[in-house]
Length: 106
Image 1 (spheres, one colour):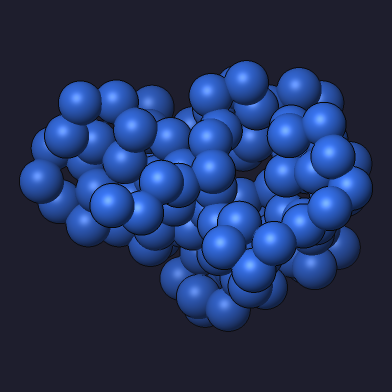
Image 2 (image 1 turned 45 degrees about the horizontal axis):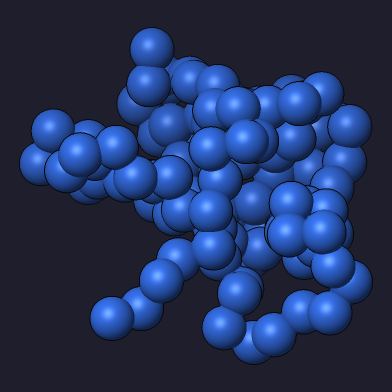
């Protein structure tokens, strides 16, 4: 297996601050070579949107994932204490919010 909240609100809660810098527009989850990037851009991928109930589509944001060397497009939304991901191929996944991190640019 690969509630409404906007990314800035989620990030502020995760970081324990209401101050929000332009650098922190995305969140990431990294596990080894695999990564998922969560953005605040509204989900616009038709293949993904067609898999989401019409009433819930406005709650989903854009994500991209690199899993086992393959790139995937997905959309995400917050459900309780996790982020639900819906991929363009129909696969779905849950990521605990505690795993989301602000990316560190080197």
